[in-house]
Length: 315
Image 1: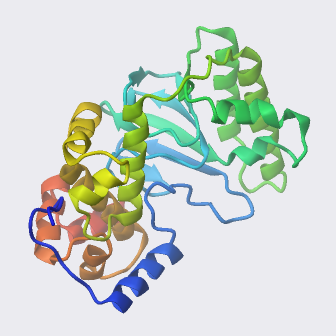
Image 2: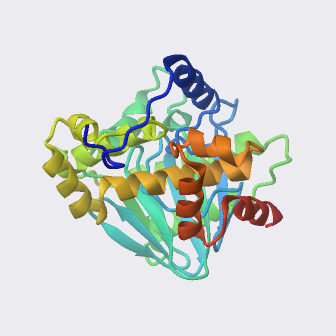
């Protein structure tokens, strides 16, 4: 079978494969589920990113991904580039963005910078099951014409949101009222956004966006296994040539190159957050030869997996 890796394929015993997949599921290891607090009683996550370092720690890879959560970003210093499949936006100091749920995107740093990223589930804003205001949330989630909203301090209501985002970040996490204060701020931010947001007419998403969402989702679920170009194309019910075209047009890369980047990003997370042996990490992310993993990792980061782990933990 023609594969993303070429003609060579690797087989693993069925039981060993199932055990490994179970381990991955148990660790919640799908890269796109980036909310580190998912599954807790308060799945609210704040990432503080200074240059290439993040607290909580995240690897320095920037692959296209999506969240099951809403996301706000605010830039404090420098500039970042925010990309979706078909749009690129520069965010400068004092600006921010709201990113809708399930929107494929990435954030790139343009030189030294400092920004915060805030993630939380949409049900935070729905209060209770029969809450009459649920439609003010669902109408945004289901609108494919609204992938994100940029906030600029020159617009009064957007300036108010930016100020409230900063206030949100200043809350004392050790306060007994912290969770309640977060909810009050988030709902106030959302209310301001919805009062001033004119929802674009619902349009059918572009076929390219739909296909790329399916391709990236398939890779996120199966990156640890051998993926053939044929199987990837079938995940979106298109030909292999159309699959290659979609990646070239939307991401400027190939499925193979994206898969390698995704696996390296996942490996970077495991190197930072676990004490797993490097050989086991190599296997878990889909590199069946440690030497090949080490070569690709060093080409990407400039250091070996062992050096990368030590460097990130020192930082």
